[in-house]
Amino acid sequence: MSLETLSETRSFGGTQGVYRHASQATGTDMTFAVYLPELALHGRVPVLWYLSGLTCNHENAMTKAAAQQWCDEAGLAIIFPDTSPRGEGVANDEAYDLGQGAGFYVNATQDPWKPHFRMWDYITAELPELVADNFAIDADAMGITGHSMGGHGALTIAMTHPDRYKSVSAFSPIANPTESDWGRKQFTAYLGEDRDSWRAHDATLLMTERGYPGEVLIDQGANDQFLDLLRPESLAHAMMARRQPGQFRMHPGYDHSYFFVQSFMADHVFWHAEQLV
Amino acid sequence: MSLETLSETRSFGGTQGVYRHASQATGTDMTFAVYLPELALHGRVPVLWYLSGLTCNHENAMTKAAAQQWCDEAGLAIIFPDTSPRGEGVANDEAYDLGQGAGFYVNATQDPWKPHFRMWDYITAELPELVADNFAIDADAMGITGHSMGGHGALTIAMTHPDRYKSVSAFSPIANPTESDWGRKQFTAYLGEDRDSWRAHDATLLMTERGYPGEVLIDQGANDQFLDLLRPESLAHAMMARRQPGQFRMHPGYDHSYFFVQSFMADHVFWHAEQLV
Image (cartoon, rainbow over all chains, first blue to last red; front, side):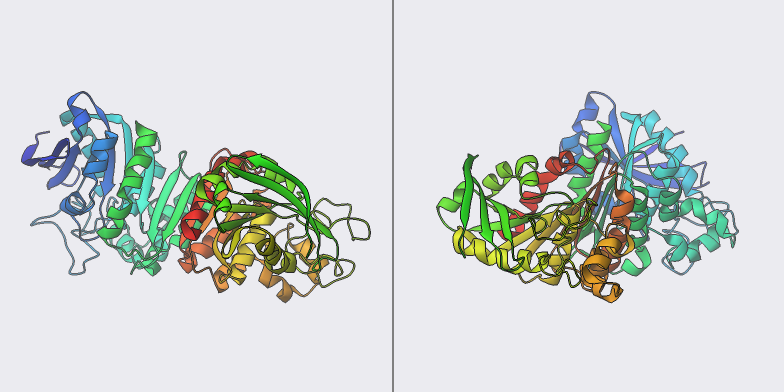
């Protein structure tokens, strides 16, 4: 697969790059960002996947999460994929939370989404292979995190493929989408009316049914504007009922913004590094 | 009130003492331990209350929790009270989890416990006054923690008197005693059949109804032998449903013993110090 370099910029000891490629999974051009720490000059480094939330593309976390400093220090690459296919000929919706910018990290089975909205395959299979072929990253040492819809993606992907993702965390995840307006609407559109098909994409249900073999770190702001949609209490209950190793932290005063994500990014990077490096 | 010194021992930069006094609350002699850090030589210091679990007296945590090093470093006093009245003439039961060594930090209203089992009053009122009168501690800067039954006591006391206890944490607390065999039996014995009288002594119910104005730290071992009795998932759900600032940590491999408590004691001492000092 060929890769087009859109930009490469020095950042701390390493390089922040933005790349485009023709995706087989989505049938569209996809743009993503990779930060390589200085350590990658000397060999392959572990990699942290950062999945973004609703309305975001590859750029939001790259510019606002302030992860580069910590990844350079920890010797981790970090990858910021887009959150959906985009462009002409790709289905969309007027709502901010459906369609482009709102892929929800599933493979759509329903029209009109089915042809392009295959973010699960894109994130878990195609893109990891692409970056392993093109960058000095160690595909056997991958962790995954994300924010909001991306936290949902990180948790569901890690619990489904714990063999591939050796560490997992989430910021303010959509924690129980089958019981939330951030979930039911999208799953109905992408996956159809059969709720059984939704179960593989609900972190609370997956936590109850299978959990994760490593420790799980969840950070949540107590002043988050979207707490009723995120349903952190459902995931916290499922974690502790399962005796899932890990921690659930509720931080006073923080909201749903990148100011929150940035405030705890160092904790997450070093959390992953401890398990990956 | 007069105080008898049973022992005083140099420990790190400070002094570990054990004392006895005639308690008005319990109508018995009560023994407790106080560690004063080196800083107490120069003025009054904040104080952390450590409430112990079933079968314990003042001595278990004093000798096995390894708190003195961190309290000396942080400049905190730490107090280890007994867990019940004791001695001849004090009611008891053959079970390890009722009667002497199992006061559950309540004021008993039922016979035969009523005359002496007034641990709530003892811990929250009489003993704080006694130690403020006799040691270089700052009664306006008190935090509270505890293990198992003591974690239950710490949480229920702090949520009831947040004005007095400026910080709170717990190790493996009995988190939802009104729904547990560690709770229903004891509350029936001490408080009677009326379950309404139990509500003031259930951390999950208090968390749901009122919460705590500061951050709450809960540590739990995932290999705890008593998880079904502790019910951490109930408290975790109540915390996150309330958006209670704080964190709930489930630590893989640790059991219910003092090896667990000791492993995370530094975290708790500095957690309290950050809020009290």
